[in-house]
Image (cartoon, rainbow, N blue to C red):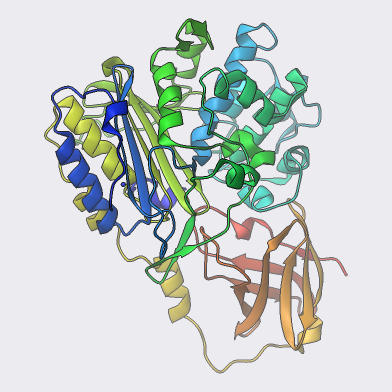
Length: 508
């Protein structure tokens, strides 16, 4: 998600006969660059598609679908596209607007009476446009720990949002909120009587003949030709399991390929028209690509992109790139990072799909855009690698250096066991098994861990399985003056899943 997005395909498969000719661009130079940066970034694989003038003019893939295996990716290899799915969610809502079933300014509570935020007035006045443009007042990624790897339904997740504190005033800032897109998915289901997955299939995937795009990894084996997600630890890529995001698909549930996504890209640059079929109106196109939440741009010092504005629309990031409108998004899934960017006025777009947590997706994107726009840009891979710093999070290095050796816990192990409850989540239990403390999350069995004494009343969290967004972490047992445990405090340094929001209180 956030950490690698700004830093952010081997032997190659390419059926040149199926691709149109790209005008005035050295495709061999592109090919060589992409192959080189795949190796420089040590990403298992990278699949790239470039669209120009309504056609897929470049589609190649590099690396292997899984480390230590021979399978090569191609333009039909499936990757999780994560938050690039958000534009599909806004497009479905645009269709419902066009059909007269909703209005962009309708209150969310008109459809979800249980919808509740940190303030009663804000809860009553939040609109569909608000939840799609990340301006409800929640902080970026706040509350993702609620849904992450959880077995909760979308409605159960939305009902827990009320316990999250605001990061700024309503409509007064930008806080990227996956929770609000889960909410949008619930609005879609309430209006149509069908799930987000059913809607996206019927309204977008089928009309565009995106026949390999799926909404759940349960279908991967039957469809075939898919990449494996990889975590990264100690400088190595480690295969990890696919996570099923279908229940929360409106925030990022699609699994797709370069070939299929090129069809979505072409339709979007044709402003909703697919051959003779109009998927959404020009009015809806303009609404989705209108800035709803603006970011500060430095107008005093030059920047790499000759940029003058930067904003978020409805499911799309917006800015200018070398004098042209840029519309796009990135996606972060456990073990996969992806980017989707368009220059609509030039009928130009770049799709980059990768299956590692150290990804050259933006280096590949900017290099391709520069070449097609005739810009003499820098070596983006070299630039981003030089800025990336050490692979281990500096906060983790600091924690490890601060460990106090030779200390003991204040209490015998059995005293730490019990049930702890976090108001935004539910129960978290600590048990004693075979002489070791075990940590268990009520709604996410895959977050189970063994607790190993770190120092004093702080314990290292030794996760049962490898996770993509976090690794090292600790939990502290907080006590009153009489050494009675009152709560736990988590410290899991990362930029995406905020365990510190939990603050579980002991209830037994």
